[in-house]
Length: 372
Ligand SMILES: *Cc1c(COP(=O)(O)O)cnc(C)c1O
Image 1 (spheres, rainbow, N blue to C red):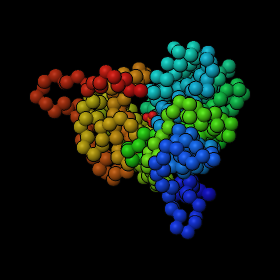
Image 2: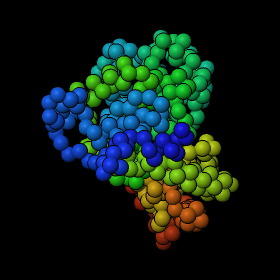
Image 3: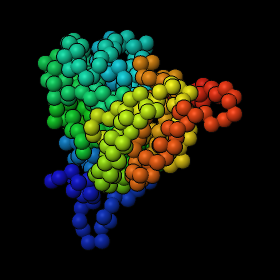
Image 4: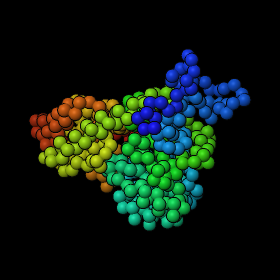
């Protein structure tokens, strides 16, 4: 069946007279003895419904987590002490933070690569335990050749894991390109309404799925039953949300391609994220990001609401990301309203709009929030 149909119907209870059409929120910490679930840290029917649906879309066995980082931690825990990981130099900041931590605490060495260069990735994969890929990368929007990297990882005998948060299973199914594991921040497009923090790992086979599920039970990064319910409800409409948001993103990338306030418009040709680079650097970009009325100035992405932020405001963001780069997460509003709002905000890039007093420094973030 087509993914649109799978998204609507997978993970539903069996069709029985007066049975519910949706799996309810199972608020229970423990279960009557004798079944496979037993305890609320090992399983919950509300997780299972979500896992069946996302697993069906990706084509593997799904394990839900409390967050995308919980999912990523479970996969990186498969790397042995002293092991080698290949990773994109522009991975999500939390992933980089976790890899830095593994390097310090477990002697793991990380080979950072440009994921656009499949040969460089193949070279780095030799002798590696895990090849980790994000595509498109966050927020540089570099695209990897997953088939080529999948072949190289298999030849090298390395596990191959893909963070599929940006593309979603509607646009990219990494398990079909030879990935062993797929990871999602379900906080983003999967749930899609900016009201849930959740993650998931989808494994190619039962053995890997069981190892990941054991990590979840031991690590305890379990989702709440209500979160799983909400994430599944969001997933039901992913295909239509994605279609609209992607059409908006394409249209905006085209309309703003030659805008005089922009040094660059990056759009990989698919997906809902567009990165723009403001001429004038950090100050000008901060003025733009804080001057919108429709676009929401906030971190995160993939919601029905269009969001934007200057990524380098986070100290943990890669230093090779331009200071003036603003990541646009395009939502479901009318594209003309989004374009008009962005246009008026971009006018602030060159016009501070004040009495000539010096610009305030770019908005700082609380010291505790490095951007992981
Ligand atoms: C947000 C994000 C994560 C982290 O997910 P959380 O749900 O915030 O823990 C991981 N990878 C990518 C690509 C992300 O955008």
